[in-house]
Image 1 (cartoon, rainbow, N blue to C red):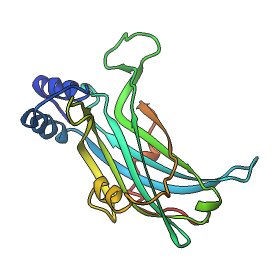
Image 2: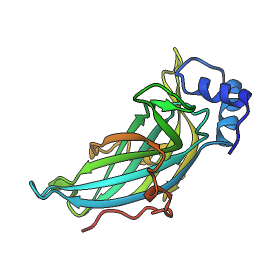
Image 3: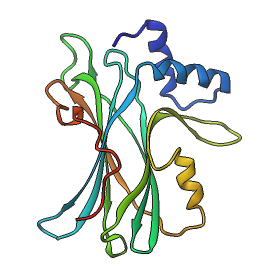
Image 4: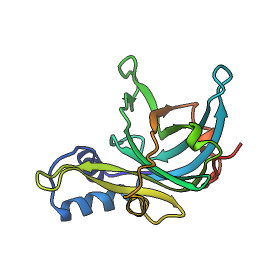
Amino acid sequence: MRITAGVAGVLLIAAVAIAQDDSTIAEQVAAAQKHASIGAVESKVTTSKKTGVKTQSIKVASEQEPDNPFVGTMRLTIEMEAGDNIWYGQQQQTQQKQLSTQAGAEQGKIDYTGEDSWTFKIALSDDLKGGKVKAYAAEYGFVVSNKVSGDKFVVVAAKYDRAESADEIMARNQDSKNVIKIKSTAKALKKGEGDEDKKGDGGGGGGGE
């Protein structure tokens, strides 16, 4: 995957939350889409040996140009079905990369592979026990601020399951009080890491025992 200096500049600018007009944003998205993508989306339930608490974990993999990366944001919007109730939640995480792209780089920086691993965790409380993922929207992009309308999340790459957008999930649950609390972490991968993330798409499986 190769990238020109001009496109690199676009990607770096795109990472910053600044006021921009629609035509500028469209140009940035078009350039970034050539070099960034979402890979596997995997979902599983784990049980704590100490507390017995079950946690729904959703891991999302993303890839981009390693030599000229931008600090992107992953946003997960999810809908879960638990018994007769539908629950929903949204969480976004920005990756803070400490990168090395050349020999003799500063100590503490990593030799970045262009891959990132994003993990979103939901504690399955009594209300969510036995819950299953009904739909999700995993979206990688950047935030643009506007003094009038506020911050806007701009999608560069996305993967959806049983929804066409995050807005669809949020809209159909706008009157619901069943909001899921989601915790998230992110990791920029270095050489030798990420083999598990290269495996096939885990799709929208999830929940259950």
